[in-house]
Structure formats: structure tokens, C-alpha cells
Length: 171
Image (tube, rainbow, N blue to C red; front, side, top):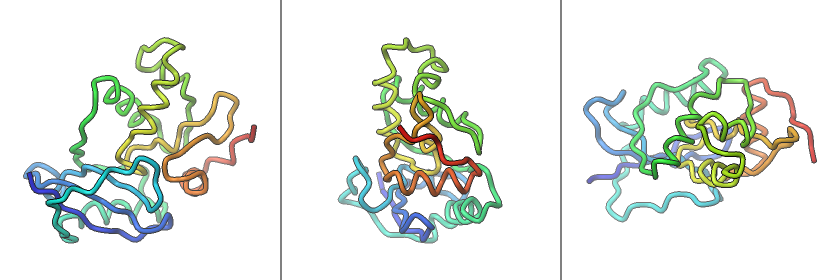
């Protein structure tokens, strides 16, 4: 399968976006990943990928609107792979409203996982291949503190501030 990619300028630095052609996707491309420079566990680039900026015009339009404060969400098709558990966690991330935060424990409860599964939920959040698009930046610590973000805590602060979320408590 052909993997397409481009870089999109943003307040977080260049966003590396990859995707696959999809006739039903807005703009004709389903997004497989969005990562930032220095990101922990960033998806490895496919060896057979092709640069095609035009294929991501719709994603760029929506991201630009989001960063300008003119949009609160995205209407894009995603082409990501993950275990059943990760998909449940990622679906729960998608349900966190713009400008709101939740904790890892609350996320675990939303998917019907036990309190003991909080660490596994954190692992699934950390494995999210769609930074910004799937709002893992909205997950904070149980004490309200700003906790890990694969793109870095400075970028998490930028995203939360953009959405009008005040600085969470520090530990």
C-alpha cells in the first residue's frame, strides 16, 4: 500500500503527516500518523513513502483553522492500526471535548477498564499515532498535574492554552 507524507507548518514546529489514499476520506487521504520533531515513539517512516503535499490539503486546512482558534475538532478519516484495547482508549480520547481535560483513571473508567488498568491506558495514550488530531494532550494526572506527552510538555501546554485550559496544577 502506498504511503504518502508531507510536512505542515504549525506553532508546534513542523508536523510530519502520513496517510494512504482513500476515496471516501475528506481530501482523498486517510491520515495514518501525525508527529512532531523529537517525539517519543514516533511512527517510523515507511520505506516506500512518497511526498505529496496536495494529498493533505484538507488536513492542512483543518489544522490551520484549529491552530488559529477557528475550529474545535477535525473531520478527517484515520487509517491507524492498534489492538482492540488501544482502539477503545483512542475512541475515548476522541470523545474528550475541546477545552476539557480528563485523567487516566477517568479514561479507564470510560472504557470499562479496572482501576488497575490505568497504566495500560497510559501506554495506549502514549502510543497514539495522531498527535493533535486525537487529543491525548487533554489527559492529565489524577492530581491535576501536567503529565507526559509524547510531543513534550511544552507542546502540551501550547495545545491546552490554545483550547483555553488554564495551567494544570504542578506536582
